[in-house]
Amino acid sequence: MQKKIFSPLYILALFLFLSASRAYAYSPAYKILILHSYSMDYMWTEELHQGITETLEKMSPPSQFRVEFMDTKNFFNEAYIKSLAHTYTLKYAEVQFDGIVVTDNNALAFMTSYGKDIFPGVPVVACGINDARPPEEGSNIKSIIAAGADHGETIRQALKYWPDAKRLFVLYDATPTGQFIASEVRQSLSSLEAPLKAQFISDKSLDELKRFVATRKATDLVYTLPFFRDITGNVFAEGQAVRELASLSSVPILASWSFQLGTGVIGGRCVSPYYSGELAMRTLMEILDGQAVPPFQSHVSVFENRYDYEVVKQFGIQEKLLPEDTIFINRPLSFYEKHRDVLLPAGIVIAILSIIATLLFLNLQKQRTINVTNARLIALDKELITTQRELVSTLGEVIEVRSKETGNHVKRVAKISRLIGEKIGLSDHELETLEAASPMHDVGKIGIPESILQKPGKLTDAEFDVIKTHTTIGKDILGSSDRELLSIACIIAHQHHERWDGTGYPAGLDGEKISIYARITMLADIYDALSSDRSYKTAWSEKQIYEYIRSKREKFFDPYLVDVFFEHIGEVRAIRTQYRK
Image (cartoon, rainbow, N blue to C red; front, side, top):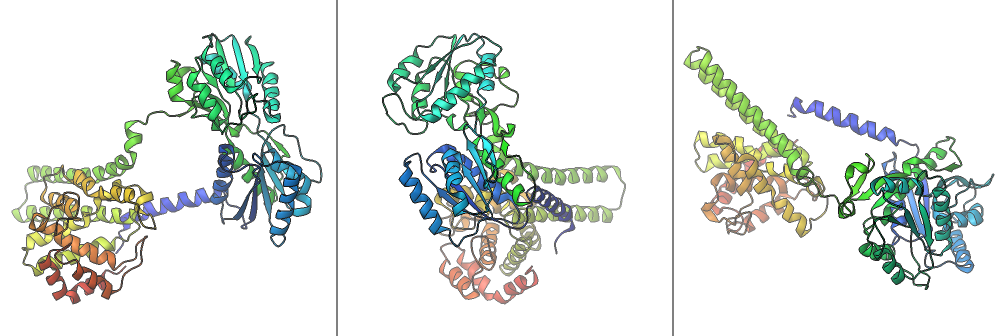
């Protein structure tokens, strides 16, 4: 029977789930088209797409979406655009979309020219737009989210951590986009309070720019805009040019786009394509929900103060000179961050074991201070042992619940283990210990990430290597106690994947070198696991299970235990029936 102790946890989890769901609750489900100007090999597009789709997937009920990539970084001429219009007309003639999100200027221009004809009456939200202006009246375009960077704030922050700067060199390419962004920077510089001489550079080859940045003085700063083509016509992959420049630069290189980070630039007030995509999808859903939305948006939520920790340290910049809300990339993880997946579950285990230790201590205090009869002392000891066993059993059930299994799995393993132990002649005390300790066989799984533990499909070799560590994690958790029950539970947790022929893990023990408690628990656990539905499989038939166990006699299992198991298979089945749910 499910213990009432879990009820508050379930209620809290249900409350949090419903609260989170309400935050994105739109009804009914919609059919959405996502039209990208560029392909996914462009990190800007990838992050926009992630912001759009992850926001969409959080909404309830979930909506359907289709995705098209115009790929206009590689193909852009009038004939190609017309061919796309023809293709989409044929492709979606029988599809009725509820709303459309477009990213970047080319997709917006395409929708402005062809949207009314291909998708009549379908509302459109555009994001990632340079030189953004409000949409025309009567257009399908209902809201436009600007992609403009906060150049002024990036430069102001730089002047705080690089206070001796007198000159700013702005590097940009001569493409229409590069020229437009450069004009934005010029406008931003006019509002700076500090005197800063700026020079704009677009007439150099990459090699010339490399020599240029390598010779800057400590009173200089370099600001690079998205750079894809130099004056000689050479085209560079995303991040290639700025990575080569940053590797040689004698001063920090500022950047205002999150996709530029990780190339050696220091960062700044960065526009986040992820949050632009998120804002676009939420705006579209508000439109479909009948709410009024602004036709033009330049929202502060699409900006973040992002810096590369390694570059900050490279130039000896003090963290206190950066904004308080700075988000660092390449910052070394703290001890807790590295081991959080193990430390947090281990803390729960330690807390439960501390409760057990406290109960033991209180019992000793009672025994020393209260004058009671021997019979009453014995009864108190029995009550404590019962409490200790219930706590151990409860901890085993917690592990199974985390693994998406019912608590009755550990009950069945405990009862079947006791039955086998009884049939091979273990003493009453040994049987009580085996039944109480066997539910802890998988305690180490509390340290395994849920993404692996609950994976529905087959594990990779690397994931299986992580799973195998639950035996040593279990030993580490339980190994600090000298109490008999926890000591036996420690042995079972550590050895229940060892095999009779020595091919198991973690120590490769064989034969009777494996504890009898672990050998019994392993047989009971595998039988019950094969008989049950799991996240990665359905339950096997009895015939399949029996054939499997017989085939692994003298390989995985102690042959004597297998023989005893089949001699009393009727009683084993009765236990599964009694504790089925």
